[in-house]
Amino acid sequence: MENKRMIKPKFTLHHGWGFAAGIWSGWLQDLEPEFEVNNLDRGYFGGQKPASRADISICDEIAEPVVNLRVTVAHSLGLHLLTRETLANTDMLVCIGAFSEFLPGGDRFARRTLHRMQSRFNEAPCDVLSEFHYRSFDTPWLGLIGPPLMRDESNWNLELLANDLSLLETAKLDYSDIARIPHILLMHGMNDIIVPPSRAYELQRYLPQSRLILHNSANHALPFLHMDWCLQHIMCYVDEIESESNEIESLQTPLKFKGMKALVGALDS
View (cartoon, rainbow, N blue to C red):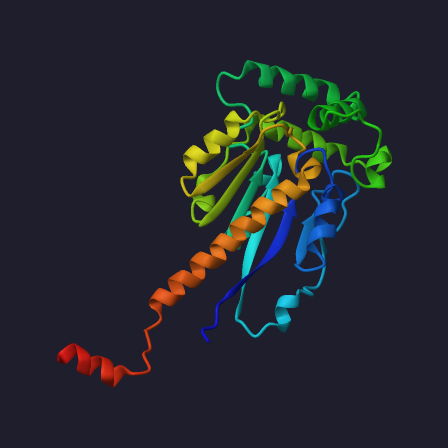
């Protein structure tokens, strides 16, 4: 019986501006029973240490060869905060609500909105974050989004929050490190008013190997309000990669026939 390679994803999660690692809690509940997950925190609200769990996948009990697929998931600005080392160690990149430039030329509304957030942040950071979360989730800020530490302003790293807020004005994606990643999945909500869907089309234009999937009703909180939808598309893509990998390997494996001498004889007759 021919052994087939099994693809086993190893996930690394990167949140965007104004959130913390706890925002991925639903993903951890679904993924960690089977897959290894690294949930990284930018440090906006107290600097949680990167979290990871040992891989306890049932795949270890299967005799088939297992190939790890390093999957990096980045939400919004999180894509721009990925290091070159992270990108170099990524086999599949998932960009959710992401962008090449937050302020492309001509988008005056986005520019005015960002400048207003920047001007108000020093005086009223809580109000700015509350409004941002409201526009992301379409729900009032009640201190329920993210871990408890986000509700205690004394833990906030206001300097880092302000610096990354300013980064939105100048951030421009360097495609040189991303272009080498063979598998890229772009996901975006059609009702995203923080990062309009047009930004996803721009990413796809510069990343021809990418696949774009749109959610008809989701907003900027797509990965948190529609987690099952996101994970379903990600795992379907992983299954496709596994099928393609096994197909390529089978084509590269010499064919073996039991009655080779009889076959040769038949061909010569």
